[in-house]
Length: 252
Image 1 (tube, helix red, strand yellow):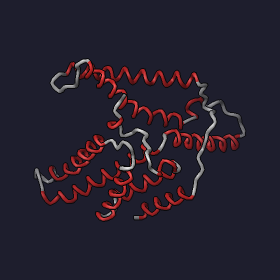
Image 2 (cartoon, one colour):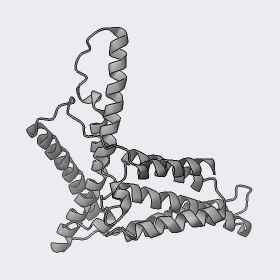
Image 3 (cartoon, one colour):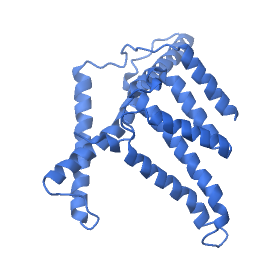
């Protein structure tokens, strides 16, 4: 079985109450957190980061390896400004506090993004996208007073959106399966063996193409149609509260 710890896009709701909330409310809240994280003071940043980590700890699999990788990437992006200040110097200690705060901002955005992916099915967001497009097309059709042709797959952007996002975690799963199969056969990735690495990359590409083909066959076997029926989740009081909190974050 593939190691889900390396998959930051996996759906792992665990005991988080966010899994029962409306996907649009969570998406707006994520945008509010990202907006506040890039503009707020250090105190607000620390509170947001602490709350995000506490919520993330309630998930069964937090993807610790991915968290460390993103933390290192955020630190590198932040410290690059200190290593190369842009005025001819190679390093400036006075830029470290600002660089550290910038790294914390990036890491906070990632933590809440992980929460969103872990507690939200991509199909839920996709259904609302398709519903919105259908409303717009219906309004246009009434104004033109003409019957339009069937839109095809392009008339179902939610399905395209879902397939694109589902492709990311499947890439992680395919990579883990190929890596484990190679280790069983005594083959492992090595920086010194370029040929072996290219062979693993070739298998990853082939495996991804097979996954895409299987998805297409499964959709055809189930009689997929762009005019599919949608199941849209209704807003609750908690969802409106989350939207209010998101509005407050936008104002920070």
